[in-house]
Image: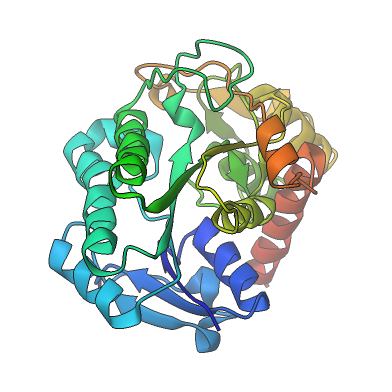
Amino acid sequence: MPTAIITGITGQDGSYLAEFLLAKGYEVIGMVRRSSTVTFQRIKQIQDDITIIQGDLHDQSSLVDVIERYRPQEVYNLAAQSFVPTSWNQPVLTGEVTALGVTRLLEAIRLINPETRFYQASSSEMFGKVREVPQSESTPFYPRSPYGVAKVYAHWITVNYRESYDLFAVSGLLFNHGSPRRGLEFVERKICHGVARIKLGLTDELRLGNLDSRRDWGFAGDYVEAMWLMLQRDAAEDYVIGTGVTHSVRELCELAFSHVGLDYKDYVVQDPQFYRPAEVDILVADPSKAIKDLNWEPKIGFDGLVQMMVDEDLKRLALEID
């Protein structure tokens, strides 16, 4: 039975990846930072099947201890300060966790168990002010937020450890991926949750920022399979993961509201407080390398994803009302 450590296991991606690895026969170790407010809501259905341990990307010694104790075959680093707007308010924290935390984890692997295969969760936000459309593994980075800058550092330090120490260390450049488990602060979930609240009469408006921003949205459950496939290769390489199709926030609103028989124009209010200081206008993946090398393709499209999120929020909120 192979052992995998997942940092950020209580997040959206961590929960789907843990389920996926359990189905593959892995022993799954979930690393969480000690906190009085840690929530296990996303992994409650598998909590008895995994091992939860404490570790902190701020603390080198805790990472060394974790790697030494469990000697994992695979480590998936999904932990980060991952909400882009927060990165402007807390840029130093974002750098410490999202950038330097990756160095600490790689260093622990190098020192203790260099045979461990390492996956780093890179981000389409690294492309920022895009240099070309669509974006592939060779597209230059131009991050437009402290989060994007931190992810660029994390990406390149992963490449550096691969090339300097011959570690099997890869990055998945994942484009936007949502699910019913996505945090409410992320725009796709904010919209779908807002639609459900409006449909159930709990509110009468939804405040959003730039409706013309375009993103490449996929389903998180599909994307964790790509993470695993990257670590099964003979050679360590980085991959762009996305659908190859872009949609605007406005289109997402149209689809989500129409799914429950409403017109978004009657409820959506554009609010300047939700605009970014530096906007990223269009992100769209070129996943052709992943399709060719990994034999990976997304199974759930944009329409299915949005409808799934709206339906789940309607179900949850209806239960709360009852």
